[in-house]
Image (tube, rainbow, N blue to C red; front, side, top):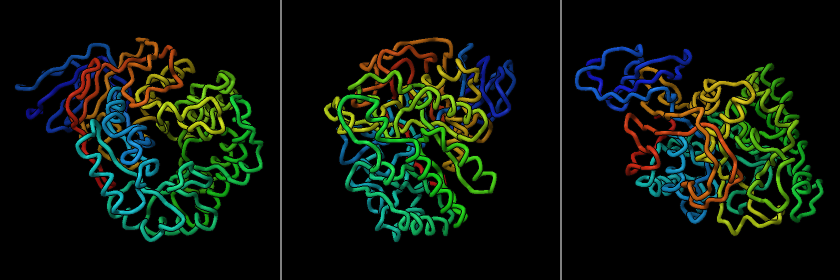
Length: 445
């Protein structure tokens, strides 16, 4: 303990063993010990007494669309990582699409890393993409450090990232399983989507009918069958259909290696409250009914759903038209994910320990980030400091996202992020940011 440079002290520190009063010592950007609250401060160490604010591990968001380069007017590494830092997120993993080029070859990954290098306020990693014609690129991308591969089973919405049919899925998954990789999947069945009514216009009910639950359920069933046949590791992205949960639970009972995420907007917003024409609520799969939301919360409680991530997918405001059929589909929620989930979680009887498990520990485990996701010796000294009982009303003008369109505008949320720390350095406090200190991460970091 004599080499400690910093001590963070709080009456409420969330550790893997539970919440307790503690002093956390830091040296060289790493947590060196979690000590009793009243432990002596080592000579030469700086004490930060947080009082009753909660010290939690920095969140790890494994589903973020930064869109940089190519669609930087939609977002960008500078703005996305500032929004992350403001919300207590210290690590994000960037999705391979909506940027141009997409992260589907080693050269494209190199381009992405070059753009991100000097703009990252938090640590940033990268997913690769699995396309119909890039099976040969998957192993080289894996060797270059991507955390896994994203695939769509229905059209992605951008021409440069086509979806996989079942035969193409089988080929890509076999290749990825061969080197022990992870496939993460947007699971909606294109045939069910094509058969659904497509009316367009401003009515949310019409949009919801166009993305039925059975599209998700069927695609997940197909994915489970492929994963079981190949003994492959797969992950279901942004689950919104509660009807798919029994399929997933049964597959796990049979030994299928499948994990699942959902998103803050599915847990906090409901179809019944979406105004017609309000396409800031549009995402795919869609926000569903309150009864369906209850099933998602139950699945988080029982472990069927592993983690909660944002699927932060912004666009310019002009693409958010009042026609749900043509408006860009994506929710901007990176800065607000922690208070949004905490507000609903506490109302349902969950504690901050649960939120940390869903949004930090489990996401770090999904990506294999062994130094992230917990306050314990040997981990990176990444922290969020939260005033859990303090409330605020969401003002879009206060957001760090490049385009401040948000489905949370005007909502009162519980939990204010007072400061965020990356490897023992405070990177934002009370709205003031340091210069970018984030690192670019690879799968072996």
